[in-house]
Image (cartoon, rainbow, N blue to C red):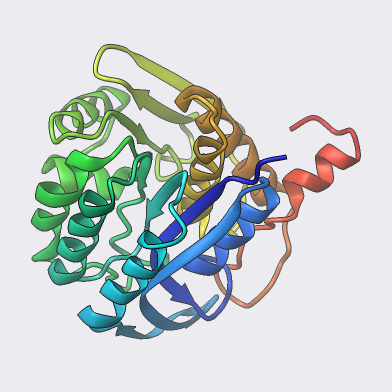
Length: 272
């Protein structure tokens, strides 16, 4: 049986709930061999980010070359990239090695509000990386920054998706987790021609740290194994829904999601 390879290019989360750690756990749970390029090391726990320590350019370039020269990924994702310099290096190496199936999680702000992408790097992300993407998966605040518009309604999200599509990504997924609690939780998918809406049950919990990383990693693992974009997103949504519902309850703040939940449900014959 062929084992497919998935690459994450992102920051390290010492608390294990997001970033590289969440991505590799998710790849493993969904049957893909995980590889990583670390762009920054963060000191963080469920209470917040205490420090961000970006890797220097040579370290990022060296990791990308090591993967490119020996371990071609079947799909890859980006998470926390932090700076213009790192974004430009990553984009250049994706082009150099002709890597396909890029999923972009445009990580900009941590759950507790700490910035994870420098303000001047947003335009670099739009210019250099979005045109290379198969799927881009912003939450609503990230979509507002990228599309340069406020998002209050589902119609606003549709307009933002159209604007983001024009930036080059072939599919846009604007997640609905930041909508009002009184509104349905709906993820919007746009392929440049039509919209699709995936609705799920909202869970009243603070243990949602790393949801964006985990969702995009699940989609990446599925794409790496030859699934369609629709299939990958449906599985990613089921994976993160199970991870939120089956709470771990770790920490005194925004705890991590349960990366074991999806497969445990499958093994138990439960619906996912």
